[in-house]
Amino acid sequence: MSHVLIVGAGAIGAFYGAILKRAGWRVSVVLRSEYQVVAEYGFTFTHSPLGDLSWRPDGVYRDGDVLTDAADYVVLTSKVLDDLDRGALLRPWLAPHSRIVLIQNGLDIERAVAEALPQHELISAIAFVGVSRTAPGELVHNSYGHLSLGCYPSGISDSVTALAQALEQGGIAAKAVDNVVRERWLKSVWNAPFNPLSVLGNGADTVQMLDAPGAESLVRALMAEVLAVASAEGHDFPPNLIDAQIAGTRKMPGYRNSMALDYLAGRPIELQAILGNIVDIAARHQLAVPHLQTVLTALRIRQWPAAQPV
Amino acid sequence: MSHVLIVGAGAIGAFYGAILKRAGWRVSVVLRSEYQVVAEYGFTFTHSPLGDLSWRPDGVYRDGDVLTDAADYVVLTSKVLDDLDRGALLRPWLAPHSRIVLIQNGLDIERAVAEALPQHELISAIAFVGVSRTAPGELVHNSYGHLSLGCYPSGISDSVTALAQALEQGGIAAKAVDNVVRERWLKSVWNAPFNPLSVLGNGADTVQMLDAPGAESLVRALMAEVLAVASAEGHDFPPNLIDAQIAGTRKMPGYRNSMALDYLAGRPIELQAILGNIVDIAARHQLAVPHLQTVLTALRIRQWPAAQPV
Image (cartoon, rainbow over all chains, first blue to last red):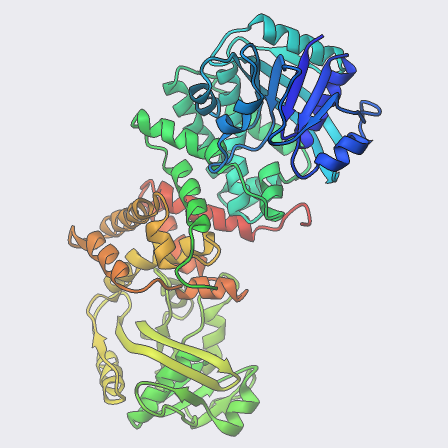
């Protein structure tokens, strides 16, 4: 029975913590603003298709606390933002044998953590889950929950297998994958075009991004650039992938992705993790990605301080 | 002494009307919402570096009126918007000998009017002027005023010369040009990149569009695409033009262009006139303009109706 410590448990952390708790694992959390309410009441899920997911952590910690009960897995579920030093966030909570688990969005998001903490096994996980926080310590799980996980940069270790089994036992599909980086490229084929474009469109939904004049062509061009960079990195995908992604998106009713919702709510967006890293990798391969570059730079312009107040 | 009729006199129309009035020409206007106030009080300029520009039109008309006093020049100074039928707007006010004068922004904006009203001489004018409306019939002239004008598609007629002379007599620099289309391409090298990009940046100023990471490179790439399309149309410019435009922009304090101000004020933007027409011409030449295309399409996505209310 392993001990898992989730650092900065937001909605994603609270959800996967609940799943591992249902599998019988010990699960603790490190919190800031929600420390008091979670220490007192635990996490309350007001809705989930999986039944009542409410749970109480085995330990609730905050900055400066010392962890006497060493964690086998230290899980980070935060957003990946430029000004967040994830190595510094994880370091105080790691025992020598602790594995690090990143359940985070984006591409090439493992490297900074691997470089900061090279002595720890690093597990990368890609989550497909609709869960959101409605109040301090209170969450709604709307849909999905499955994830893919594997060692970074590749392989499936015993720790990965054990974690995947516990997640399955807790009630979700967890696939151990031999090449998690490839899985991130696959997810990026959709996310790198649609997420930042929705922000440029001031919260555009999928219908706008497919039906506006020229929009589907633009999305296809962005996807083709992502695939070209993936290929330069050694990850090739079937030629009909773009058609399949467009068709799949058209099948769903129009919706706003999480980056669009973050933008509309005034929260920071994971621009570098979702798009910037891909453009940087393209530059290392001297690959031209003019459509991706334009979307990225337009958003960087928006984020840059104005000379003139509005 | 010619008679000029300005249709839909906004700030630009009120300004050039004032200049022609100072030259001793008869100047009338066709108005909608400001009909009453202008009929009663004329146009009031609360500020101008040229002195008091306030003036009273010789005639004030509105839709449905019949013009008994035929106009030698019928001037249109409206924005160029997709849903505005400029031919229909001009037609009721034209006598057989009337020349049409377009003082409007954008590229390839003459063609629709030339096709709708082929029997009239068409003069195209490019204005460089900072003038804005502060209340009904009330204006502020901040800066500049000079313009270039010529026959569309090319040439300098006697009507052009007479109009330019009157404008000069009224106190501004008016240059009759043999190739007004080329002048529009030149102005587009700055406007087609900076104006729409400022809107994508939610009102970004020139400092943001040059100093954000990757921004100057993007502006240069957009300018290079405009120059490539211009060249395909037979208009070549000196190779150092981009450097000169960037250097000139850097010399000025950061400022928001008129499209950025329109966007921030919730007014419609001249997206097709400033950028869309250039992308359409590129397509006719089978020229790839991925940076321009991305900027254009991102704005079209923003303008497209959302499936999901925010």
